[in-house]
Amino acid sequence: METRSNQPSRADQTALIGAICDAVGNDPHRMLDILRSVQDECRWISPETMQMIADRTGLSRIAVEGVASFYSFLSQQPRGRVTIRLCDDIIDRFAGMPQVVAAFEEGLGIKLGETSADGAVSLEYTPCIGLCDQAPAAMVNDIVLTNLTPDRAAEIVALLQAGQRPEELISQDFDGMTPHERASRQVKNNIRHAGASLLCPVPDGAGLAKALDMAPDRIIDEIEASGLRGCGGAGFTTGRKWRFAAGAGADRRVIICNADEGEPGTFKDRVLLTERPHLLIEGMTIAARAVGANEGILYLRGEYVYLRELIEETLKDRREKGLLGQAIMGQDGFDFDIRLQLGAGAYICGEEGALISSCEGLPGEPKTRPPFPVTQGYLGLPTVVNNVETFCHAARILDQGAQWFFDMGHEGSHGTKLFSVSGDCLNPGIYELPYGHSVRELLAMAGGEDAAAVAVGGPSGTMIARDQFDRCLSFDDLATGGAVIVFNGQRNILEIVEYYMSFFVHESCGYCTPCRVGNVFLQRAIGKFRKGLANPEDIEYLRDLSGTIIETSRCGLGTTSPNPILTTLENFPLVYAATAKPSKDRIRASFDIQSAIDDARHLAKRRSTIFDEDYSK
Image (cartoon, rainbow, N blue to C red; front, side, top):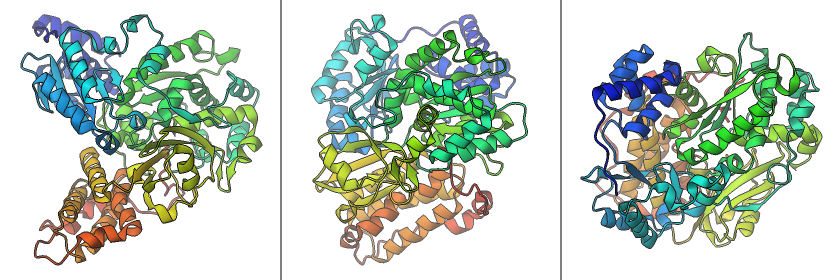
């Protein structure tokens, strides 16, 4: 394996940093792009480099460091030429990741969190990378590897040590493949059921062509009449959001696609980005027409970097065909273009305000609301944020009509939904179904009839037991951004809950005390239950602390992070009762969280407004 090249001279380093900053016009709002490029080129972001970037962008070094230290894919210590990130999701663990880790450690001669002595390779864990349907999985630099085994891990190490590039682990002809071929060779989309809206044959550009013959208000009317709601889980009415943005007084408006699909167990947007990139961009363009926007941003999670070339090719192709850029389809005054913003490993950036902060070149911290993005979002401009699935549906609605979409699904939940099914089932993958199917029906399709528990909506959703499998997958019963995670009777419910709480602890931005500290207490408490050291009274402690965190957290991460505990307390009460016993070893910490959350209560602004619902997706 090649070792890391010698560090460049100061003159060469200055020239490199200058070129990276010049490529984005030395714009401080493109800080994440700058830092990602530096990380790729230098394998770390040194204090000296931060100062150079600060000088070029007009910021302080501390401001640059604040961004560099926020994202897990950016490092302030040297990493190897090859960084292997092993997915640490609970599904990967159950699929054999511990044995895969052991094989990598043995072959490389290093432990997790270490870099080899020759500086060639770093080995680390990373949270869910959106590949639960083909776990265990890993990233090797920008390459994705799936269905790993210990033998495959040993083979990968041998090939890398023999001098192969990560790309050659996929194919010796990788450089000669198209972007779609590269993506498809790395990841199988596992489309198990193609529904009537998104995964069926879709005509090119039909929705946009019809939108250009409609007044902007009429487009919004059509979206509203269809009943389309945000497909990321919150379910805010899409047409209503667009109308708010269109009515905001401003000369500039922005459309942002939230493709930061970070909820463990969710991978539906990954499939749409691969198979329907043109439909996505068409939907964003229709939204721009409707609200009067001429700027767009597609925020792609860092874990989906393997799709970057495919998306850039799609954008380039649409510009060449007159479907993006100036005077779209020959209509003077209809100017709209999109830039790709790559994330860098931060679950919180799936939250609307944090995503906007990240696009602005800041740490991905949520914003205090109001004001809301539809009136003051990206750079203070009216901004529409929807996710990949929502924009794709919008394009289909303009093509087929509002009534066509409205007639599918369930009362209050119209159209189809992409479900990401993973875990203990025979056929994990994507199922596009009309809203209204029961969990039991979906399990039968996926070969998960022996399920004992299902996490609908991932860790921030609802964990249900067998006696609730007849519940309805809809906004009014079991809402989900897409994740449906299946667990059989051999799985330990408390182990799953403890993992999910550790995930939320790791991914908290740390801004407010309830989320930063409270979730640590909850995680410790579940650990005590697993060890049989909890008291029966501590079940009520879990409920009380969870309620405090929900009441006083600033954003959606904090308000949903106790859900693994609360929903299992409700639906699996005997699991907790069986492990709790009278004991002197109490959970309660001496830290007074109630006195520490006064500021958080103020920031939470629990006021009644039309926007009380988190509608970020």
